[in-house]
Length: 233
Image (tube, rainbow, N blue to C red):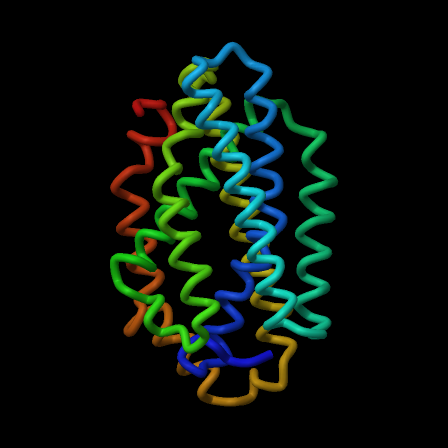
């Protein structure tokens, strides 16, 4: 696997974790939003949902193609992909439509915030591969553009605050533990873990250069309660 993010093993692998999670995650998002089409939504909202579903399937397909090209035969990446898809397939039948849509809103909340960080701070310019730049720019812009649609759907379906909170909690816990698991599989099991540059790049990625940790917390805090829990779109 080539190091297409700043020629850095750690940063490339960390972003690859998100890419792999995107393939299964956006399929879940699209299928969950399709369930809303059977609800008594406003006709204009239904058209937006149909467009949203097409875009999510398109994102998933494009990201899968990118992963196949740049992950190659890396067994770690393939194993992580199987774990993500199997876990989502196992858990999906266990939750109601309202909880699924609340999970979708939470997922879109996180991805839109991540997309804002990527675009606002021009992190795409750190990518060495033109294909990566094109994929992320397209994906980030569309994530931001339609991020409020799940909230509109929840409002029209009158999903209550408790269901919204449960959905947010389930989605957030799922995404964070999968990201942690992906980092363990793709980073900690690699011989590159013994390279001091790997640890240095991890520190700069989170704290000094990209400042991912700080930027995530500050961006998230702006909209958490107003946008997600109480449904004031």
